[in-house]
Amino acid sequence: MGDDAPISSTVQAWELGLRLREHRERLGLTAAAVGKTTGIGGTNLSAIESGKRRLTPAKLGDLADAYGLSAGERAELEALRAQTERREWWHEYGRLYSDEFLRLLGLEAGADKVFEYAPDIIPGLLQTADYARAVMVAGTPYIRPVDIGPRLRTRLARQVRLDGPDPLKLDVVLGEAALRQWVGDPGVVRGQLAHLLHVLDRKGDHVRIRVIPFMAGAHPLLGSALKILSFRSAKLGDLLYQETAISGVLVDKRQVIVESVASFAETFDRALGDHDSRDFIRAVYHEMERF
Image (cartoon, rainbow, N blue to C red):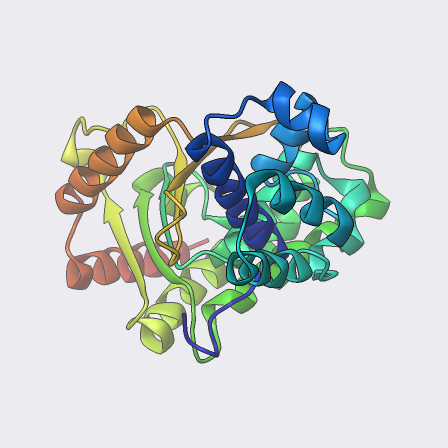
C-alpha cells in the first residue's frame, strides 16, 4: 500500500481482527479457551475478531502471549491497533446513524474500489448537495429537520474519496429510472445530471458511470440495489452492502458475494457503453430543460 493510500480505523480494526482470528485458529484454540487465559470472553473476542470492538495495548499483549507471537508479529499487530484509535470524521455524526451504517462509512473511506447498482436513485457518492437535501426532506419521517444539515455534511464528506492522489475507483450502473425520477424540482434534477457529466469529464479515469435503459430488458440485478466494496489488502475480502428505505446491512458470506460480483459484472456489460451512457445522460438533461 502506497504512502498516499487511504487509512481508515474501521478497515484497520477489521484487518487486525482477521489476523488475530487466523492466529487463534492456527493453534486450534476455541474462543472459550482464549477467554480463560486472557479474560477476553467469547462475545468480546468475536466482536474483536470482526473488527467491531477496539483493543487496548494491554489486551492485545494478552492475546499475543496466548498465541505465542514473535516480536515481529506483535509489532505488526500493534501498528494496526494504533491506527484503530484514530478519530475519523464520521465519529462526529455517530448519533445520527446505526452502527451498521457507521461501519459502512468507515469501510467506504478505506476501500480501494466500489461497485454500485442504483436502479432508481443517484448514489450518495455522486449526489449534489441540492439532490441529497431533496432526498432527505422526502425521506423517512424519522429524520428530524435539525438533522438534515449534519446528514448532508456526511454525504458530501464521503465524496472526498473521489479526489486526491489515490482516489476511490468507482463503477456505477444507473437504472434509467434514476435519471428520470424527479427528486426536488426540475432544476435540482438538471443540476444532478449536469454533475454526473462533470464527474465523467473530470474523473473519468477512475469513475465509470453506465446506464441500463428500460429497453435493455431483464438483467441479473433487476429488482435489487447493491454496493460491493473491495479492498487493497490481500487479507480483506469483498463486502456487500444492501440497503432498503429504512435500513441497511453488510454481508460477508462468500457465496452471496461471489454471485453478487458476477451479477454486477454481467449487468455492467449489458448496460450502455461509456460513450453511449454519457450521451444518454446528456439527452435526459436536455429533456429536463423543457420543465
